[in-house]
Image 1 (tube, helix red, strand yellow):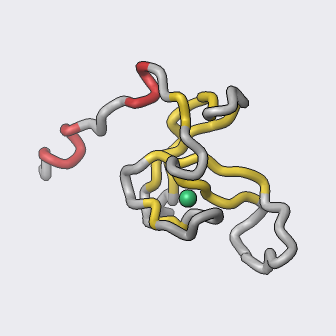
Image 2: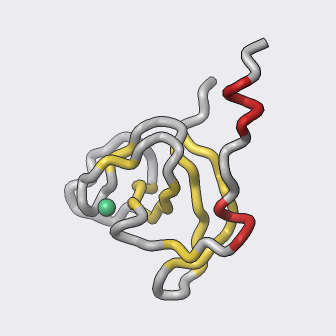
Image 3: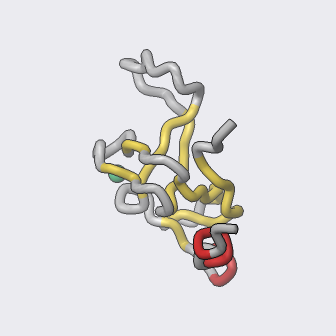
Length: 89
Ligand SMILES: [Zn+2]
């Protein structure tokens, strides 16, 4: 089963709150600005507590880095491993 996102690690947002950073493995749509979260980009997620929620994706929604900037320090912003894409065999 393909994974939709990859857990990067705990980080803090611009307000200093602890959150988990994820890397998208498929396109997501930000729940706040409805902008695209492209595969490979980082995003955070938050609990879904909106009234219109009829979304069948569970209890969380993705939020892009523009709406909720993350403080990525050092290891959290690891470049994607080149060995996965360049070694076909
Ligand atoms: Zn957004």
